[in-house]
Length: 94
Image (cartoon, rainbow, N blue to C red; front, side, top):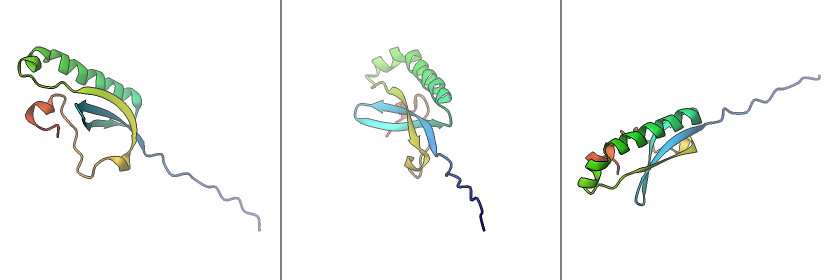
């Protein structure tokens, strides 16, 4: 009996993360299914930080740096929640 069996690979669980870094601390700010969406979110977050630059300087608040990187969905912490663009101001970064 000749039968062709088709093997199906598991769906790739790679997603794109916007990562916020302040000093030595990094945190996944948001995740997206496409790199383009992650880049757009990073640009928006950077614009929000620029809009409040004077305020951040007056408070001597460290400014986060944002980057985009691919990650696996399984690498997200179990109770992960998205980080607001300026969430680090209220102590939500850590």
